[in-house]
Amino acid sequence: MPATVRLLNANGITSNSGAYSRQSLTSADLDSSRFRANVSGKTRLISDEEMREVHDMMSKLATGEYTNSSILENFNRFYKIFPDMELPSTLTSYVFITRPDLNLYASSRGETGATTGTEQKTTLVADNYNDAFLRYMNVDYPEMLHMLTRDFDSDHDFIPYLQGRTESLQIPDYQIGTSEYTVPMFNYKMPYPGVANESLTGGTFDITFREDDRLRITKMFEFWVYYIDAIKKNKMRPAYVNIKRNRFDFMCSVYQFICDPTSERILFWTKYTGCFPTTVPVSNFSHNLRGSLESKINITFAYMYVEHMQPMIIADFNSNVHASTNQALVPVYDEEFSTTGTTLVGTPVIYRRSNNSSDYYLTWYPRKRGMVSSYGMTSTFGTYYKSDQAALNYISSVRGSNYGYQY
Image: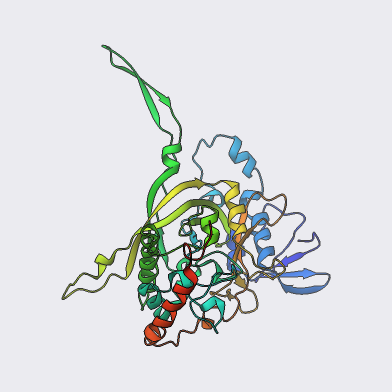
């Protein structure tokens, strides 16, 4: 913010941004007042970004003898509390799950569709078309089926519907193992440090989701687990590109970010790598004459590796974003209507506000239109049986050797 800006609060009190007196406005004053900025003789409401800068500069912590540096390097003999350095009681947590690459639809990779005359993106792949559960899901839950494929959205690699319905996620403690050296007879024990591999690799975690009115979450994970089982039994087949590259197409990554009350500045982040669901609690639907269905569903995942606070996690997350960087970001605060910003937004992205900043910020691109509506959910259940025989004949014609693939 320029040094020539003069700030006016609701009571008409002014303060120069270049030099603040010991009686300057406090954080509480800023939070409860509507400020205007007078720049080159023109008065306007200051932006959300400028408000943050003013809050930092005018806080009691930034004036007088109490600064971040002095608090960090000196002893606090009276246990004085500095509110601006306390962890807020209300934080915002975000969980993002990347999409697997299940071999379900004929896509841009050139897989052969089971039928002709329709768009490749909505055509079931010939290799797996004769699976009854797959055809049922394609008729009744096509939007959830597409979210398990790479081609669902070219702007990102995430499952967007799960982000807004995640209730909780377990994170393991980071710890090193220990070994003991024992002296016989006298029972002296001396511990020695080991490594942290046990707390970082090979484990399970649970995610709790809020179920919706059509049990979409249950259906999605039921099919996801069913696909893994079918692949292991050779009832379904992965895409040739994944076979060639020796890649598991049913695995995903899970990110968690904890932000401060602004919902933007990131305080903590974690990434699970090599994840796949192992348990779907269909026992929730057990008969209970005077009970009701559980409104939340707990899914157990297995993972290969977990990391915390590593800078490469930020780079990995942004690599899952393919949106155009020249789009304007959606602000958290709508200055025109003095309300919070849009709820439904597009792709998330993480950035730093300046080269000198050590903080990362989570923000969002605008949403786009018509992604799920193009999947033709007006199909009736009759489509499930409509062309079974024609599809099976077509599959037989393209199988050849090893389902048409040459190794």
